[in-house]
Length: 285
Ligand code: GLU
Image (cartoon, rainbow, N blue to C red; front, side, top):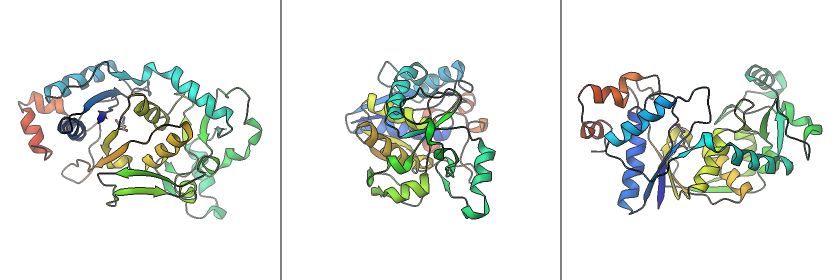
């Protein structure tokens, strides 16, 4: 049993991260398994070394230990590039130059009905998918994002095992038909123009590279898991067991955000709290 915690170093860890990390760590410990750490720093415009240092400090202070070396996604661009090239050559991606405004305008056109929202926002209305001339064995265009052509990618029912709960209480075997994948998720971005990859592509490649058998993470990523399973099928990678957990919320019921410094682990540390206090606060004592 191998599980992991995969924070992005774009701000201080807060109580929600502590919940996720401790839950994954304790699950591994109980099963006699391994707990790994991965720094998800593909967004180099937001990642900072000082946030990464603070991640190690906070987790150690919480009493967690992890396998080394720690994987850092910023060092894995060539791997992502190779896999994207393979997908591009198999004619399953298309280049997209739409920005958010274009997508909103196209999705709100009178003949489109109500825009559908998926894990990444509005389901892509397909504007650039029709430009088929840029597909195939040509170099990958530099100035465009690359989207997965979901209609071509989703050829069969995909499934994963959920041992936690999705936001609507979903648990057990979670299946998605090709039709659901096309209408509810659509042509997601696999390589952002400014990043050369995306969260979805990197997380799938790296969970497989780290031989993760159990993915523990927040319920906000439950729907995105359907994308991950499609990618695992396309790339011939195993599908781990998923355990999506509840989100830690503030007093108003809003989920905690990175900018919510008041609930940063560092703030609690500075105020003299103990790791046991943190466990009690998040219900993991
Ligand atoms: N890096 C993601 C985050 O910080 C977590 C991704 C995951 O656990 O799959 O929200």
